[in-house]
Image (cartoon, rainbow, N blue to C red; front, side):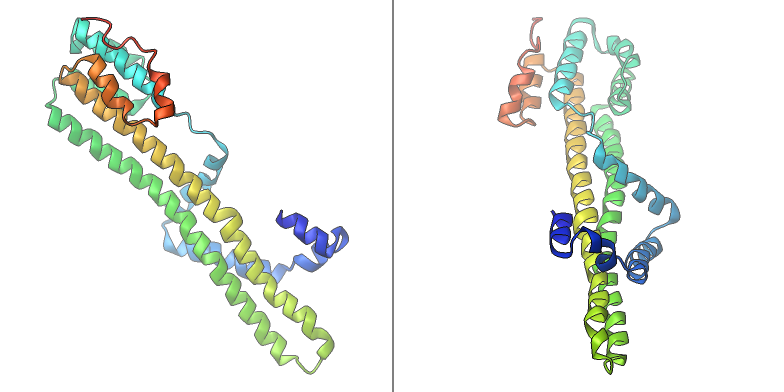
Length: 251
């Protein structure tokens, strides 16, 4: 939509001529990325840049499927005991769930299992929030450095006001840095940050389901009770996807 507005106003032939200015790009983009670099360690900076690719990947998270898997585990534990879950853990792809199962199989106290799992949960969320804050910081730096570029352009323009013919183009160049900063913030950084926040919220909920499910299995709760407890994490329209599980099938 932005490109349509630019092309409709300036024309395709004038797109680069009117909307591209190398010094303005250096001030805005270079300044924003450099200032963000000073705000983070190099490792966190690189990690933040790499997280951009996550925006284009649909997170492989299915909470309803995870609940069904936990119900299946509860049925196995109900029939054969907690020790039987060790074999099931060997086939688990999710490291977080596998860790919780092995803690249960080892006979770890339920409160300690919760503490260990929640500590890892906080650590995972902390890493996610570090990437999110990278984009929030970069998004704040973009408009700020755009304004700095505009002020530089205005100072240069005021020094050459004796030539009236150059005032219009000089003002346009001065304002283009503000445009670049707004594009960086609103077309890139804010959407990326919001997407990462949404993905983080979904993953945190999934891991909370795992914790509650595993602790319920360890407590020896009925699979049907576990199902109803875990379904409360889902929106009403998503709960039907869990109903096909065989919770409580063995009495």
